[in-house]
Image (cartoon, rainbow, N blue to C red):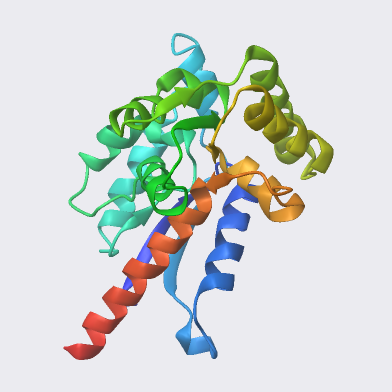
Amino acid sequence: MKDFFTILGGMGTEATEAYIHLLNERTPAHSDQEYLNYILVNHATVPDRTAFIVDPETAPNPLIPLAEDVRQQSQLGPEFFALPCNTAHYFYEQLQSLTDIPILHMPNLAIAAVAAKFPTARRVGLIATDGTLKDQVYELPIKAAGYEFVMPTPAIAAETMTLIYDDVKAQNHVNPDRYHHILQQMVDELGCDVVILGCTEISVAEQRAGNAGFPVIDAQGELVDESIRLALAARNRQQAE
């Protein structure tokens, strides 16, 4: 197979399925042959990323199986890797050092989208796992881009973890009222001009429940759009040769 990319998925499986659904939905295809070529590595048994970031002394290390996936898939020669798990970007530099094939950086894509879609935004909030909040994979580049970073309160963070782990991961269920309440608090109580959805399980909530008009940037959606752009560019180069 030529002009293909590899999806490093399974973290979690429902979130990966949401990425693929959006990928296929947004691809400008009108026949089987116009959809994109990709390999899905749904590595569901990768240890929990947040558990390791919060407690690296006792929790199993997700980097070990992720590194193995990158090494194996690199031998096949994909155009690029898509990593539809925000928390796994804690290991981004280590994973990228293992291969010359580019790994798309979902947090950076999301932050770049703020300027494009909300040009007057100044206060940028983040809802994500405790691991992503702790590892600052969003916080540091948001500040570097000149925005005021808004951290969720402990209560909002706890409610977000319930949405991610108890609802989506455990039950494949989205509680729209819970999701919208989280967004309402970030915007109305904390004064966010835009809220980045920094977990792909929250992206599942966005797809199923909608954002009720609150200003959001869906990191997974930005990864989807960049995946499509690069995959179509690779296909066009292949056809021109």
